[in-house]
Image (cartoon, rainbow, N blue to C red; front, side, top):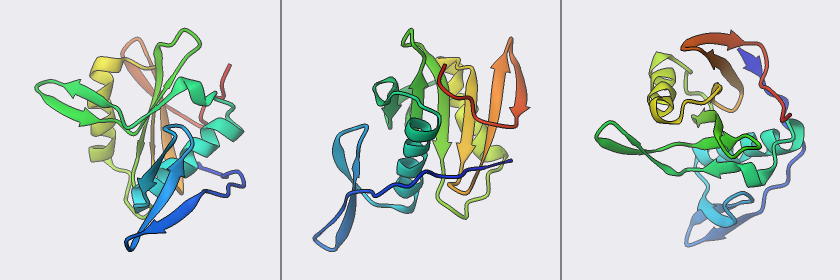
Length: 145
């Protein structure tokens, strides 16, 4: 399990009609501030500020077809050739990162075929590399090359 040390981050937050919103710097829009959205926004900042992934190579909450269903992934990071490179599945803090969470990201990977799978609950995460159909548990999240 990897412990994440998040960078300093001052999110833009507003309140409207008794709801809180956070500004998503990647999507360039206001999102309802749910516990999962809080994790997603902080993890995005970690990828951008600490791991140096350009925001232009990150997609957030896009639809993906898996078998006969439509789902939405949390984060996909693309490589320099604009090919899917990493999937990140975010859960709210306190949610146990278990086989069900890993299975979810593995289903998304049936279509995307990325090199790295990440699952996080904001406090901790697991990172897996995928090479030749074999998954390996990693000790850290790769930085942008």
